[in-house]
Image (cartoon, rainbow, N blue to C red; front, side):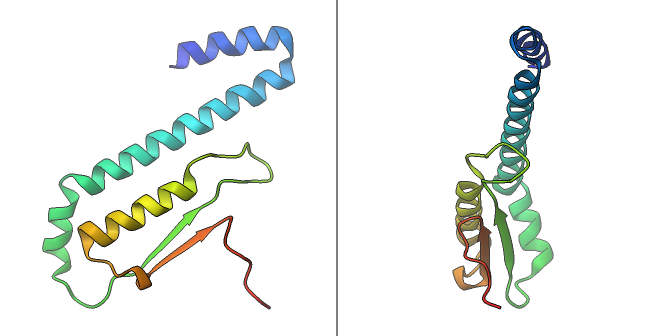
Length: 115
């Protein structure tokens, strides 16, 4: 992957150096984001669920704050964080017995708090 990005960067830099940096930066951010999501999902789906049940012993309620922002002012817009929040909430409910009312989701679609 790194070799492909380097070759693409060299090619794009010949055309437009500033645009080349932006394109490669976007590709790297998206690739890292996807790697993180796959890693977290695989941890939740595999052995962690069993260890979590043993350690937790069902004491009290479980709460989760899930944050998914697609649009940043200084970075390229991302495409899946909001979907990832929804998927993770579903996993928490189905695999870890969270209640939907104890999961708070904050996304860039969430209206700002009233002052």
